[in-house]
Every structure is written in structure tokens, then in C-alpha cells.
Length: 366
Ligand SMILES: NC(=O)c1ccc[n+]([C@@H]2O[C@H](COP(=O)([O-])OP(=O)(O)OC[C@H]3O[C@@H](n4cnc5c(N)ncnc54)[C@H](OP(=O)(O)O)[C@@H]3O)[C@@H](O)[C@H]2O)c1
Image (cartoon, rainbow, N blue to C red; front, side, top):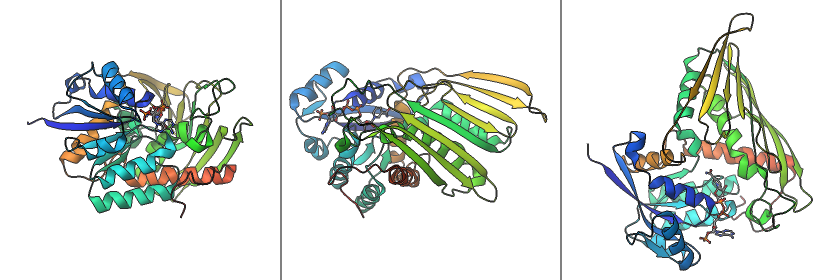
């Protein structure tokens, strides 16, 4: 088998771009991947100095990696196959659009855009240019999640009934500057857009993708508690109701920026058992499953633990490389429709919760 070499251009030098690049540099053989390898060929930052410092710190200063003082130079680089975008949420739309128009394949951090309108515009541009586009929902590609999906769909636990999931993180909001991306409404701050994708991805994996649901969209009920500091949501709760002929189930989801995570972070309750996922739910390494008898008593319990080299971001990178190699414009695991569903739900949660971004933040509004 020939190995496909996939060449990445990295946009921005923040926390998540650092984690992603470190994972790209992990030898794929450590995760039993032999058909693709990743190369970082360019890094773009708002200053060349920061781009170079990022390469020095995270890639041993490799002289083969070009440091650019603008994002546009990375999009224009002929050696780059795909762009990874790790800027704040409200920058994603314009960054991704520029990359797509330059004819590059794109992996864009979550939440993929500020709203559903922006996403539809991006998908249309990606279609026009014939490039691959994916939101970086890395959880969907991790080994534990793939195994739990199989377990759910095997039917051995019966139909799913209720899924509870929470992701919280204590950002110390009383102390950090109001310009921090988690607090600044101009950067899409708040719990929903930053942390909400993860409880939601579990609901999408377990319920939306469940064969009995036949990809029906759920109804949404939501409320938001906003911090007086800047008006962004500090705490959000939303319920998704799947009410079809064959699947009747609910997801009860929440996220907070002023609390630590709860443990277990995800509980999926079935007619004949329960799956518990332990934190962090964006990159879980451990789950348990309990099977019930007819009286609801536990008859069997199993614990599964996963280990691999790296942070877990590389699995989605492998997927992007394979899709591009195989001429696909989207991944079947986290496809465009799932991002559209996610952004539609977030738009509805913000509407019900009364959270509007400042004028001009959303680049496409209809
Ligand atoms: N997948 C995950 O697990 C995960 C985890 C955390 C965050 N994220 C997502 O990744 C994105 C970035 O999060 P992060 O925690 O990495 O943020 P961060 O550390 O603040 O980094 C953001 C980077 O974006 C660039 N940037 C461009 N315009 C900016 C602006 N107006 N203000 C601030 N920075 C700007 C900066 O890089 P330059 O100065 O080099 O241009 C900055 O370093 C968010 O959308 C977030 O939801 C994903």
C-alpha cells in the first residue's frame, strides 16, 4: 500500500492550533495507521514572529515549515493541500471562505460558524470550488466513540430513551479580561458555542444517527443564563426531543463556563441498560456499560479503557486525508448535514435564550 502524504497549512497559533499540530506530528503507526501521513508545511499568524515561534516551540523549528505573517499567504501557498482553521468562532466564516476560494480543502474548528446562514454560504462556496470541507468535530472519530456507536446500534441494550450530557469548564470569568474569547460577544463568547458542541455531538451520535431515527431533526427547548459581565451565556440548558414512529427519546444537554465538569459527563439510558462516559467527554478514554434484566437489575457490567499516543486530534486529521485522497467532498462520519443540524440547533437555542451577537458579527444573516 502506498502512503498518502497530506500537507497542512495552519491558520492561527492559539491553544487548539498547538494541540492539533502536536498531534499531526505524532507517527501515525503508533495508532496503527499506515495509509496516510501528515506534514505541516506552513503556519500563518497575524505576525511572522508568532508563526516562527509556534514552529520553534511545536515543531522543533523545522526549516521545511514556512512561517507567514498573514493567513492569506498560507491559502496562496502551492505546497499546501488543506487548511486547518483554529481562530475564534466568529472568524471561522471569513477564514474558511478565503481558504475555499483559494481552492484549498478545509478543516475548521467548532463551532464551524456563528450561525446556520454562514455555514450554508460556506458549503455553497466549497461546492463551487470542488473542495473538501469539514467541521473539526474530533470526538466523532475517536476509537471509544466508534465502539460506543457500535454498541448502541447492536441493539443489545434495547432502544435509547434518555441521554444526559454536560460539558463545563471553569474559566474563572470574574478574573479574566472581558476581551477573552469566552466572554466577548464579538467573538461568539459564552458556553453554548464553545462547550455546547460536545454534549450535542453525543446526542447526535446516539440519537440523531440511530437507525430508528431515520435522520429526523429533533425539536428544541432551551434556556440561557447570561452573565452580567458581558451578556454572554454562562450557563445553557437545552433539550432535544426525538419523536418519530420508531424512536422516542430525549437528550438533556447543558454547558457552563463557571463550573468544572460533572462525572460521568454523558449517561445514555436504554430500556435494557446504561452507558456511562467519563470526562473529558470531548476525548473520553473510559466508559462503562450495564445490562439490565426484566426487573431493571444489573446483570452484567463492563468497563472499557482506551489508550493511544497523542491528544486524540489526529483521528480527524486521518479522516480528512483519506477523504481528500479518495476524492470526497465531505466525511460520512461528520458530514455537512450534521454541521447544519448543529448550527440550526444553536441558532434556535440562542433565539429562545435571547442571546444576540453584536451587529455585524454574523457575516451572513439570511
Ligand atoms: N477541538 C477542541 O478541542 C477545541 C478546544 C479549544 C478550542 N476550540 C476552538 O478553537 C477555536 C480557537 O480556540 P483557542 O482556545 O485555541 O483560542 P486562542 O488560544 O485564543 O487562539 C485563537 C487564535 O486565533 C487567532 N486570532 C485571529 N483573530 C483573532 C482575534 N480577533 N482575537 C483573538 N485571536 C485571534 C490568534 O492567532 P494568531 O495571533 O497567530 O493569528 C489566536 O492565537 C475556537 O473556535 C474554539 O471553539 C476547539
